[in-house]
Image (cartoon, rainbow, N blue to C red):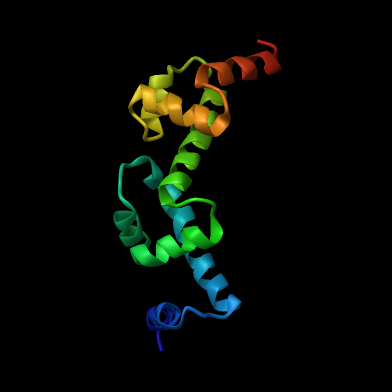
Length: 141
């Protein structure tokens, strides 16, 4: 039997029975984790796409991806992607302290300045400007 057939069989069994051995869940989790890592490396998280599109690109179903996020992450796909975007924005702001916030937001996939500021504040607890200022003070600039 090929791997694709076995994987499909495992997922069908999960949906049908709703009971799967932890080792099988871990295998499915690992496969999706690796696929997500590869997807992020290609900057897939910066594009505006729905979970259905992401699932298709990852070679899985929307249901399986949703199950994965509910099982392994707090929140769903959109929350995970937003957290990833803001984390990446923080890295960019660290490396390029004079880059405008609008450029950073656009680069990480949140082109609207007010949405970028709102999401940043929600996740980090302060605005991008306050965060940048605190980082520069820590570095002694």
